[in-house]
Length: 203
Image (tube, rainbow, N blue to C red; front, side, top):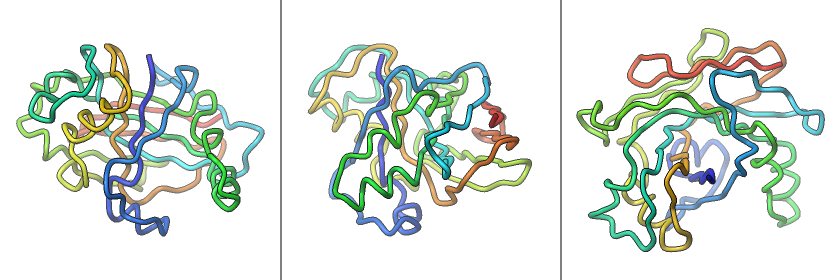
């Protein structure tokens, strides 16, 4: 399986990092070794001093597809969860300043804690899903799928132009504003429509 992540999909987050609004979905990959499941801890890596959380809705791909037309894209995912795109912001900023790729800042081991998944039929409107992240009991990020520049179907269709999506792939759909640093001892809790889906302690 692979983990595909969409960047710059919420305008407020684009503004907070002083990035440009993309003309089409921007995506990058994390390896399967990034995955953290079953509410296991996130271990702060020794190579960074500035790890940030980024909460995102996550789609689970349910069948193989290539060059998927948008009108059929909804049939290629059947479950929705929530995840954390843990980012070594210091490494990312250093790479960006030199015009270098920043895969190491996003794809390191354990950089993708992911919750359990809910059937998408459970949601009455996929374009109106509320989610949020609490850090030590205080809400730090709030998002709604209606605020995405590119919706779930846009994302699936666009990705499949370039690479085949396969059963079991995860697609992170972008983070809203409010990203920030974590430290050892912090507790991150992610919610969809008020239901706690993910709990992750930083160790």
